[in-house]
Length: 233
Image (tube, rainbow, N blue to C red; front, side, top):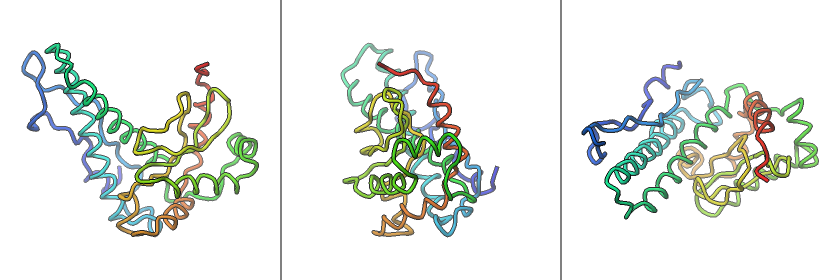
């Protein structure tokens, strides 16, 4: 495990943290979600993504989503224990937002690699050509999807299990505007925390930079797995 990754929290949710409800035995529930360790050092993606930005993004922002997802799970458990669902909608909204943030960031870290870029080959390359016409068109579409998000969100390449094709989609915040039955394969974080420290208001430059870092082996593996998912229709 890289030295810099070891300094990042592996679980932001601590049982002794104030405000976390206990179960019927008086014990605080164990955290379900943990911040994954990176497979590279924080500085390994430079100059495209700085080590300082990576440390803040992985060690602080991602950790906050994990902490709040675990807190939402604990509060739902308490609501069931008490039989009081007065705040159920609030807790479920918090879980949807924070758990989705955790999942998308976890995909992103695997999608990136210090020796990435270029373009995919094999089945994924053929599917991109079939779905978008060419790799260059796909690249332009996904980058435009990220660049035109209003506010915070993500752009993603996803496998549409119903249509059995690749699509791009904008994800508002972490969880809105999703298509049911679509499996995300590669994601671009369009939240300001993903780029502002290094790129300031030049977010388009950041979206172009990440094309030098894509781990096509990981994306191809996700593509292979996604095609095994049964259509929801």
